[in-house]
Image (cartoon, rainbow, N blue to C red; front, side, top):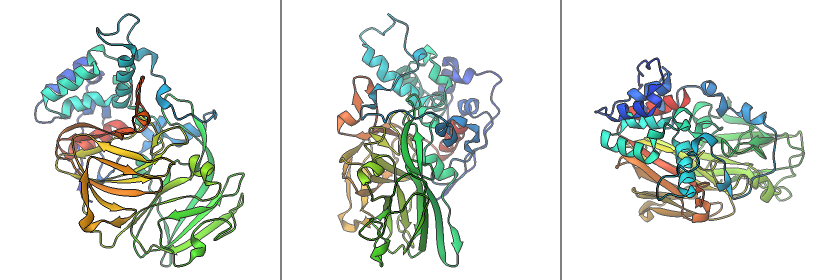
Length: 446
């Protein structure tokens, strides 16, 4: 993946006008794709650099997104599948009797979800898109209300995220001889599916849900050490791996004894087959995987014939916290960002118990691999792709049309109810230049 250029952000104005209606309109009036409004958000934060989904600044600037903040919260009963009941900030709702003509409370609630999703990114978009586009976006969001979310981070920045942790603190192995050694813990955790919903008890690898992505290259010798910090036994299965030794397959009472509390267990194998694979519990799996013991295992081919500008891991689940993408429901789902002309690889992985047909608006997907295996002459193009439990699909998206494109499960009760969009909803945000992606990311994490 190509390295993105560094972006120098100008010094912000002394007030917070960039976050107001006046700031949005001024940013929207800029020409040439300026990013002046981003400066007001970023507060001189360094720009993101690096390959693919690189986020640059550390998360220390955004305490609400740290795992520690989640871990300190008191557990509450596991959330149901209906995450549409997520509250909205009281200040966001218009005063009683001020529902716009022709609207109902449904419309107000639906708009509030999107306001939370965009947050203080709205002024940045006003400075990035052409003025007519920016003004329309402002009108849709109702920036003239000067609503509170214009001054709040987007919902997806207020909770821990796999996409962020993979980019900022990737799981790196220790090289012992010619073996790549990874060390993980298996933990009881609490997780925030949504920034406004109380944390729910779950399980995680390295205190994360989903667990950190384990990434190696085809042909690597791999050893993964799991320390069981649970009060129960478990086991770990590397889903899709072609093992030379079946005793590494991770199925208690078939290929091994279960990993008891306090024990560290090692899995040793050669990454023989490349592709988008997974790792998860295979012991009391309905409960343990459902509560969060799952993660991505990616084996890059050597050499990799597929060249992309960015990559996005997309793990779906439908148990802990309801309908989730990478452990979160809309509006707390990290968008797929791309610059016009770039190619994005999305790795769909279904760790749940239901099939989910993923539908991208406006831009087709080119399906290049299934379960890690290249499709070759069987590649196909679609805008809706059904992914069954246990399946993985790799798709390429050419970001050829500017805009904010809805990207969601098309089983509608998984995505939208009377209170607006929730659960398995995301967007593909296509901006004019790669520098804009970097500036947006720097602004979000400032």
